[in-house]
Length: 298
Length: 283
Ligand SMILES: Nc1nc2c(ncn2[C@@H]2O[C@H](COP(=O)(O)OP(=O)(O)OP(=O)(O)O)[C@@H](O)[C@H]2O)c(=O)[nH]1
Ligand SMILES: Nc1nc2c(ncn2[C@@H]2O[C@H](COP(=O)(O)OP(=O)(O)OP(=O)(O)O)[C@@H](O)[C@H]2O)c(=O)[nH]1
Ligand SMILES: [K+]
Ligand SMILES: [Mg+2]
Ligand SMILES: [Mg+2]
Image (cartoon, rainbow over all chains, first blue to last red; front, top):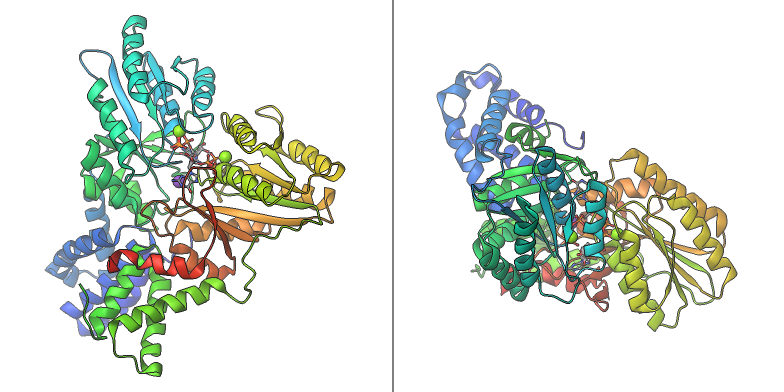
């Protein structure tokens, strides 16, 4: 990831010029904040999120601590890193388990984000913890979406509930709950079709599924390569549907992943897992500090 | 919410609009610098003029040196369209739409299910083949993609069909093994169909941010990417990252995807695209 000479280096350069002045002025800090801003924008953190964030960092940076530091550049990076980490919240790869089984998890998001794959990974993860998940094929639109889930189910030896493509997803979800009760599945994972956050009809469909099966966890699956649009998507899904957390996919790539910060900032919901590959065991807990380093190219 | 005159605030607003459209901070700053020069050169006074000039500039970059932005498909030749890109970008769907379009233009189209890896990827392409009414050369899930491509090349050579569209598995551009596998597919094409017109279409998801630059760069290193299809432009993302890609890497955008339906594929229009970059703020 050497695309980006590290923010630390750049800031070091910035501050070198001021070395002899002995004192950091507001203008000096402003210069450093410009570098921070560029670094975050290059990482695809949303524009407005960057604005707020830089404001917050500026306040801290103007203080004594930086002035007295021998290496003000690194000091500013440290502040930026700390603030980023805290913004992204704590490590929370917990799924809330309902005291009254089954626990219902619904996966939602844009087309191609990684919902179906993440559903398989999640089922695999839960099975390894001794649970008995049922996967539900709630995508009746995408060609071979049901088959895709069934193939994953076969690979994992986990049952898949499907009623084909002629029954509404709401009805599929409802009947899946009956099936889970009858079979004694303690986890139900509902795959849904990819959809645009501005598609009212399909957003209503999700609301209806929610109203019918009352999921304990509605997880928004977000592609970590997403750009500025991540805030629109996350905000809409959260407002329309009320999400409980995020899954960030495709982090095995070389993206800096600023979408993580954007989605977290606008929803306030925790990032629960990250996808680290196409294989069904490539699901990991989310570490805010690592993500902060990654966004900063460190 | 616009100032009528050209001032610092306006330049700042322009930069913000570009960044929010995923043009990227460096390309955006560069464009704004160009605008400062234009304002002086042309003695522009009015804010609305400035936005028009900006759109022209972007459209100009996107059109590039050649005005041949269309797909390179020739009725009197054998043509291969190799479709590549990262996971979930829209490759398979684009192939379905493209096959439909070419068939309507009286081409004889053949598809190859080169994604033998992802669960039910072959079934997905088979369904598209059925919808469009074209044959799909395929093998078992888990089999060697090179073998399917080889078979498909043989079929194209021996039949009356004139266009072969090859689906490939999604791969992230930093996965060396998978990228080498793709390079091999490219070599098979060159060897088996040396006379054919080859178009390598990189599918980019418009919701992608700056990582698209790395995608364009690294895919171009293993196969000779000749065009981009920018998908999912029916959402709220603007896909502005292609401005920098066109400018730096000289890869033209040829097609856009505007939905999941069979007809949701359009030729890329630079002016329309530039217009849309500023659409929200004018609304
Ligand atoms: N490298 C990588 N690929 C992933 C990851 N998660 C999903 N994918 C791939 O991304 C592509 C899309 O994944 P799907 O699970 O089909 O996405 P989806 O959100 O269900 O897609 P739709 O149902 O069409 O909306 C597939 O090629 C997956 O293998 C990940 O963490 N890393
Ligand atoms: N809204 C919208 N959705 C699209 C568009 N193009 C593709 N999709 C959807 O995006 C999702 C992924 O599309 P695919 O064609 O499976 O993508 P892919 O690149 O072949 O994915 P992999 O083979 O898993 O890497 C599907 O749900 C498609 O229906 C588009 O232009 N607009
Ligand atoms: K995507
Ligand atoms: Mg799916
Ligand atoms: Mg595909």
